Length: 121
Image (tube, rainbow, N blue to C red):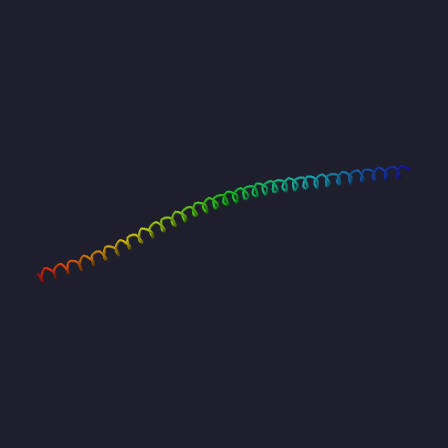
């Protein structure tokens, strides 16, 4: 019976050692899982920060592009007004040139008639 008691005690001690090893293994696994979870949470936080930065940059870029488009449209309108004004001024200058040429022609004809009259008299 003493041998049987020793065998049971050895079995119990072996079971306790196995249990402790299993606990140590489980604790180690839990620590690795916690570390992996923490790393995933940090990565998720970084991704959220990057997404927020990207969203902000896109919004800023869209605002800048919108402002530039408005500014370009205003410059285009101003250019069109200036071109229209210059076109009107060129047309007026062309009319003035035509009028002056016509008047010069009439004066030259009148001068020629006057000279002819003077020669004839």
